[in-house]
Amino acid sequence: MKKTKFVLGMLALGALSFNSCSSDDDGNSGTLAGTYDLREVNVSEQNDFDMDGTSHTNLREESDCYDNGKLTLNSDNTLTYVYKYVLVDENLGTSECGDETFTGSWSISGQAGSSQLIEAVYVDENETERTIQLVKEGNELSYSRIAQFPDRNAQDGAVYSTGLVEYVFRK
Image (cartoon, rainbow, N blue to C red):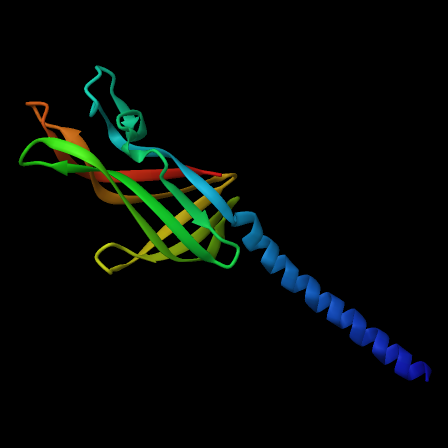
C-alpha cells in the first residue's frame, strides 16, 4: 500500500511539473500579446512633407495618415495589422491617406540580449504572403525595411522616395 501511495504521489508531482512548463510557454505569449500603436515611421533624412517649414525624420510628424496604425498580437499567436500610409499620385503631385487591415500569425523566433525576435506572417492586399521580423524591447515592437515613403520634389509636388523605413509600435 505504501508503494502505491508513493507511486501515485510521484505521478502527481510529475504532472504538476509538466503543467508548470506548459504555463511558462503560455506566459511568454501572454507578455507579448496586446495592441501596439504605431508611434514612429522613421526615415534617414529629414522631410517636410506637410510643408510647414519644419522637417522631421519621423513621418508621423509630417502626416496624420499614419494615425491609428497598430499591430495586435493575440495570445493564440494570431495577429491583426492595421497598416496606415500616405498614398502618392506622382503624376498629379498629390497625396491622400490609405489603409489596409491584414491578419496572420506570429511566433517567437529567438532572443538577442534583452530583445525578443518575433516573426510575423500575413497576406497583403495582393494576396502575397509577407514576413516581417519584429524586435521587442521593453514595451516596443519595431521592424525596418526598404520601402517607398512620401516626399516632395523641387516643385513641392508629392513624390515617393525609397530608403530604409523603421516602424515603431508601443504597447
